[in-house]
Image (tube, rainbow, N blue to C red; front, side):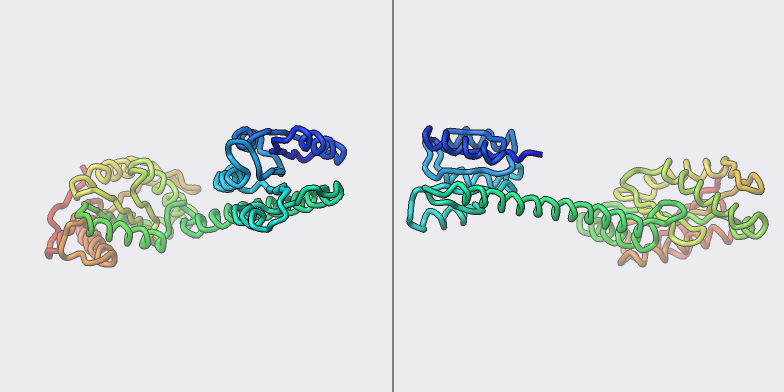
Length: 322
């Protein structure tokens, strides 16, 4: 692909001579006779390199260089400053503004060509490295995402859930916001695994995860915590708020037929809930202990209930599925 060179030069004589040289070198060219026109062309056409005269009508060359380097769309375009001044002050000022190189007029055509090619090679190398970095960042994002997910259900894993719950816990305490945590334990899944095989249990876990995703919000923290247990964090949700999706989910899972490889299976779920504000909950680990106790109470009574833990010996509220 032929490189595009933008020349920002107000002198008609110098511009004509330079454009002819660039054409002989095999470059495609754009020309602006003042700083404002040069900026517009740089932003719209995105040339591969800019030759910039320091002395321009209106916006001067140094200001043009500064504006180009401040703009995300043009900051990576190499700039070669063209100047008649022998003093180093303006050259240094241009380099400090972000210019990549400079040439003092008059210059030898072959030196101009060599400077242009050198800066184009540098840009090509930088573009390649930037692309490689973007691909690496994308790959790292994918790896981090995979590391955060349970491979079977595609819900968050235990570690990631605890990290997010800690964040929500701190936010809820600081701003006095409601926060509910729900522990879902599938009733008798171990017996099903022994009877129908591990594949049947995996089918139930995967389909249960789908039912969870269907019945809870995008902002909710959904995880497969361990084995047959799911742990959910519901930001801005009181116990009464949490009961709405939990009752809906519990009814749907009880009505659902799990089509495992060896059989069609029905299953129920025992659910424990704990919520902020509650002075007994000092950190996210307290939450886990609380909902475990609530689920244990449900299991002792045969399962298939929702129990809300309040810090007392007995749960405040118990809901039996009809």
